[in-house]
Image 1: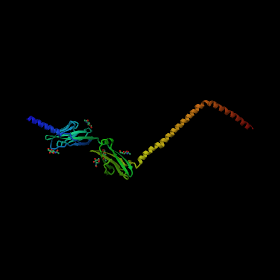
Image 2: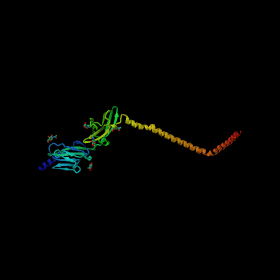
Image 3: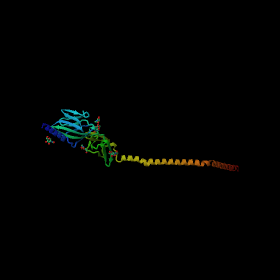
Amino acid sequence: MPGAGGRLVAALCALSVCLGCQPKPPFQIIGVDGKEATLEPKVNGSLTEISWKRGRDKVAEWDQKLWFTPSLEGRVKLDPTSGRLTFVKLQLNDTGEYRAEVLVGEEYQCTFFSLRVLDRPKPPQLNCTATDGHIQVRCALDTRDAAQNITPSYKWKYQKSSKEIPENTSAILLEKDVDRSDIITCTIGIYSAKANGSISLKDCAPEGDAPQKRDRTMLLIPFVLIPAGMVGIHCLWKCGVCLALFQSTDVTEGAEAIPENQRLQEERSRHLEEGSGEKASALGS
Ligand SMILES: *[C@@H]1O[C@H](CO)[C@@H](O)[C@H](O)[C@H]1NC(C)=O
Ligand SMILES: *[C@@H]1O[C@H](CO)[C@@H](O)[C@H](O)[C@H]1NC(C)=O
Ligand SMILES: *[C@@H]1O[C@H](CO)[C@@H](O)[C@H](O)[C@H]1NC(C)=O
Ligand SMILES: *[C@@H]1O[C@H](CO)[C@@H](O)[C@H](O)[C@H]1NC(C)=O
Ligand SMILES: *[C@@H]1O[C@H](CO)[C@@H](O)[C@H](O)[C@H]1NC(C)=O
């Protein structure tokens, strides 16, 4: 009979462990590379043992003494009273599924976590445009940060006066008569991490100026470059035609040139002789 009882206890024990660790939807925890994150298990009662697992591997334990897997050694803290596991300095590859198995009396209580570690945000890019009666300043996330699909918090500030602009959006509108010598700073917050970028309101082109500048450059193409090109082509074409004509005259008439010239020369000398004769007679008379 004691054997059967032992088997029953073992079975119940196994069952309770099994029941205690039924997979449950995990708590979603998000942290940032280099920052802190805490996984806090749900504990009903007072615990006597804690075991933290990542997937199937045990990564941290408290059972009279603390133990950590080498990759977490020095980077995490385990609180034996609450079972809390704190990553002091997250790494991107800490991203993963974790679970706490806490022993309370004879029962294991399990809590599941899904930890996601984000990249540290890069300074946002600011630009501004003057629209009708307003200046719009935009604060754009770096493409890598935008790809993480996290909506950051935004903080806006005038640098000169340190005055805050109470907006929590990626773009703000300022009155047109704002001090153009001031600088606007946008600070984005992604969980515990921050990054900022600035823009001088001097660089904020007055309405329509920036596009006009671009237009002026664009106008060079139809009104200067194309005519210049056409004149050039025309010249080349003309020169080519002239050259061709010149060459063709040379070539086609070259064959007859000598007899023709000779003929003309003969004629000319005849005229000259006659003329001089006339001249002489005129002089003589
Ligand atoms: C905590 O445990 C006690 C008994 O051990 C139980 O009655 C109670 O419902 C539990 N509370 C929670 C929140 O699970
Ligand atoms: C995790 O990343 C760190 C650097 O961020 C690296 O030193 C470490 O080897 C990586 N660990 C694993 C298991 O890939
Ligand atoms: C300013 O940034 C916004 C958002 O990133 C972008 O759509 C826009 O083209 C930028 N404007 C200029 C003039 O760079
Ligand atoms: C700003 O907006 C973000 C996202 O909408 C939100 O999570 C955050 O709590 C807000 N911050 C403040 C200070 O209102
Ligand atoms: C912007 O970030 C830099 C560097 O991270 C920091 O030194 C500076 O104090 C921040 N400026 C503001 C206005 O938050």
